[in-house]
Image (cartoon, rainbow over all chains, first blue to last red):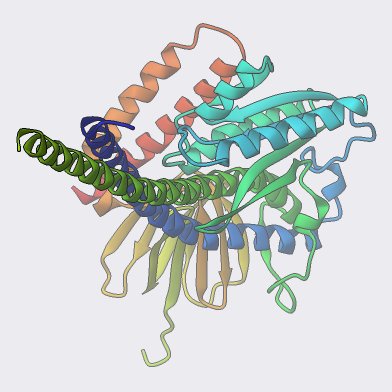
Length: 292
Length: 143
């Protein structure tokens, strides 16, 4: 049986661990709230931008000709973008993204399609490099507080890959923020810009005659990169919120386990102490009897 | 004048709405030149370049907002400005903008190693420089 000192030492250590996991849970909760309000704040911009594209597309017969919307007849190379976090201790958050990205890659390669792997987040970079994957390009340091111009830089890189003919399609693998305790892995095609993204009922172009400066299709073509930027920025924000949510859940579970462990250790400690006392009494009684 | 109509202006950015007020007039930095918009303007959609959105308040004072690329839509006395960044002159931190400007210039000069990485970083620095310069320019009005 473990000695009293050993048990006391373990209790102190579990206690300290629980303090850390509790603190991490609270930090994650605070960051999650901040991220949620940033997702909220971003919504009107994304909605206005996409609606305008839909409206403009009804005026423009030439969307087929736009470089960003041209479907390639043959898909030879696909870029897979995996959105992970910069930090661990978030349950299976990072592992899920990496596994999904590798699954997609394997599937494509079995079909004879070449792949280019692009990774956001230190954790994904670490794991994939360790597994011997060649990364085409990677970014880190964005997952804590992604900014729109970060998304623009990534979007610009992806657009250049696509327009330059180096890839025929770009897929984005990221965690969609469903709720603080639930994340859904998504896999979206962001390039070419899907036709459905800019088709729909025109919102307010109906009865009025607009003046366009420059022409409607030129405006639409100039705004199209914003579609990719919005998709990237949204996935950065959602991934960041999901990461905090996953960490919060993981840390809550860890705190609960620590709590349970403390209970059973305290029980063991009390038993051991009782046993020691009983032992001592027995010894005293035995000694007294021997003397008498 | 009894029937004088006001113009409602909204400026929307990825970080949220930065301006929403009834005003007398707005001057937009269109990519083909500045556009002054008053109430009863014809419905219009235009592309915006990085620049300065000037707003004449109902009391006749001017307000300046540093705005980025995007579009503006005018419909029924409402002007919707959708842009990748927007900062009212009063809220611009001049010393921060100066630091950003200097850092962006340094980054752009470091562009010696070729390859995709350098290209993207150059693009980022260039964008940062344009934003910083625009902020400093617009902030100049409020001093």
